Length: 311
Ligand code: FAQ
Image (cartoon, rainbow, N blue to C red):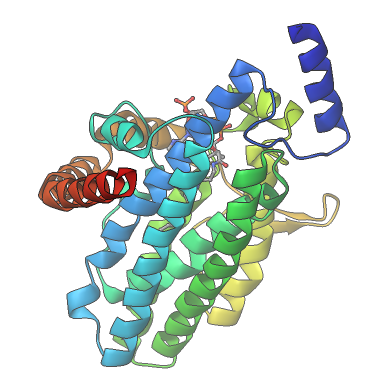
C-alpha cells in the first residue's frame, strides 16, 4: 500500500538515491518539482529577451556571434527543462499556457531593462554567476531528470559567465566612458542579482520541505552568501565597486557581511509590477501566437507520418 511506498521513497531519499519518473513519489514532491522546474524553464525562455534586445546592436561581429550563441543556449536550457518537467506527467503546451496567463512564475531578474551594452557583460558576470551558484548544487537534486539536465546547463552557464567577465575586462581597459557604463550597470544589477536567490529563509515557505526532499541542497540565504563571497574578489579584479556600503569581510564568520536587499522590491516584481513584467509577457505571448503555424504544421506532419505507418 501507500505506506510501504512512502517508506521506500523516504529510504531512497535518505540514502541519496535518485528518484526516477516511474518511481512512486508523494504528490507534494511531484507538485513542487513541476513548480520549480517549470519556473526555471520559463526563466530561461523569458531570459532570452533582455539580452536579445542587444543582438542587432552588438558593437562588433565577434560580440554579436557570441551573444547569439548565448541566447540560443538559453533556448536549449528551456527545452531540456520542459522535457524534464514532462517526465512528471505535465505537458509543455500546458506550462506555456500557464506562463502567458500569469499562473506560473519566472525569475524576477528578467524584469529589469538592459540599458547599455555593458548590461550584457554584467548579466553574464552577475546573473549567470548567481545562476551557477544556485544550480551547481541542483546537479545533486534528488529527481534524476532535473539533476541530469543541470549538469549540461551548468557547463554552458560557466561559459556564459566567462564571456560576460571577459567583455567587462575589455570595457574596463577602454575609455572613461566605458568604465562608467560598467560601473552603472553593476550598480543597477547587483541588488536584483541577490534577489534571484529568493526571499530570506525565515520568509521562504518552500525551503524546509524542499531541503527534506533533497530537491534543494542549500537554503536561499546560504547560496546568497556564497554568491557575495564569490563576487567580491571578482569585482576587485575588475576594478568596479559593488553598491553596498555595508559590504565588509567578517573574520569571525569567515564571510562577507552585506546589506539587506529591499525585499519589498522583490515582492513587487514577483507580483508582476517590476519595470518590464508587462513588456516581457506581451512579447512572450506574441511569439507564442506567431508560432502557431509552426506547431500546426509539425502536428500535421506527425499525423501524416503516423497514418502512413499504420498502413
Ligand atoms: N523570482 O519558498 P521560496 C536562469 C517565488 S537563472 C521569482 O524560497 P523556492 C539562467 C517562489 O517561486 C533563473 N519568484 O521558493 C539565465 C515561490 O513562489 P511559488 C532561474 C521567486 O522554490 C541567465 C515564492 O517566491 N533559476 O534562468 C523568486 O523554494 C541569464 C517563495 O519562495 C531557477 O529557477 C525570484 N527570484 O526557492 C537565463 C533556479 N524567488 O512558486 C538567461 C531553480 C522566489 O510558491 C539569462 N529554482 N520566488 O508561487 C530555485 O532554486 C528555487 O525555485 C528558488 C526559490 C531559489 C528560485
